[in-house]
Length: 84
Image (tube, rainbow, N blue to C red; front, side, top):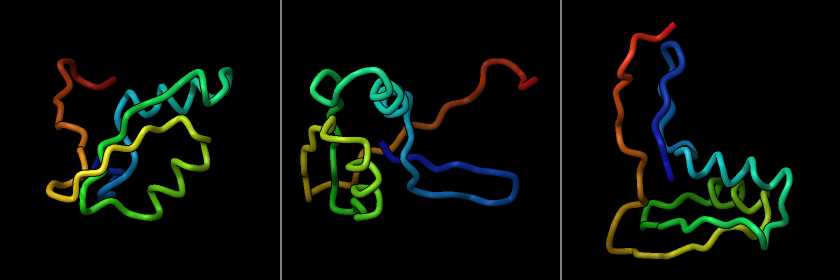
């Protein structure tokens, strides 16, 4: 759910990310909140600004809270091909 992103020399930590998140947000352009949803695992480091941003897309999120762990992070990946 949360990702780190690098833009030129700027490192952005704990940004909303992940393919499933973007698909859910995009689907809201055509579907009602009741027709699309995603489970979000919130840990003890969950931030209020992230909550407010997700809430702005409507009630399409199902939150599971677990204060014993950190919030789910997007796993690192490596491009298989060279960037164009």
